[in-house]
Image (cartoon, rainbow, N blue to C red; front, side):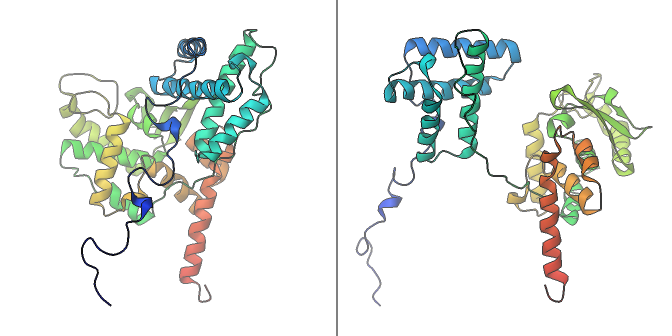
Length: 335
């Protein structure tokens, strides 16, 4: 078979040309997209201001609400010749269907419907509308993704990755041990203050989502690493300052969630853990899965994780079940 000469032979695949392939979700392009009329824009801005004042939403969340509502308002004017006040249930369902045709993800469509619901609920409550057009619109079901999990040997390798002879390494070891021992959310870990930790009682008092408080046991291993960190590393990091947070940086303030995620990635690479197996909450997921693998009750895991609804916790039973299937297939003579 003759080798093809450079520049001669098969034509390039048109799908690989720049701009070809699946259409990107138009609402995801930052700063790009249909704009509604000035009156609708003013209504949407007023709604976002109200959300900011009432709920204190972050700017990123407000920007997403504004983008979703502007997209719907522009579509409504173009396709149905209606303004926001005249929208009906059929209009909203048709718009959502158009999102499916544009290959938007189910999670994105669910978020857009959530934005519409909040907007129309507020409009209805303040008497601007006779009825809420979103009241009977069903949200698309988001596919349930299993959390990334680590095996127990992988967790041991990750925990051992920091250098405990260095102040920052000792802090990081104490943080990783605390996370695996308690299953805290990353935001709860980096926000942890000295008054929330009782080493003598062996518990940490956590203020979780919705300002709900829970007590979580620490375990002997985590307690030992926290004691060592508080005695050896924290005074050096804090200097002469007296910060409230348990885990501090060399600048004497708490870590951000993003900074902690970078640490997890770095130590994961050092431990030889594939990047695809890591996530910011990887030790929280491992905490829950390993408890279930060792016979813990699902209700207990729910309380420790701070889940308001046990259906959120049941996803870990799927992880444990899949692991048992793999072990069975690996070790059973007829597997």
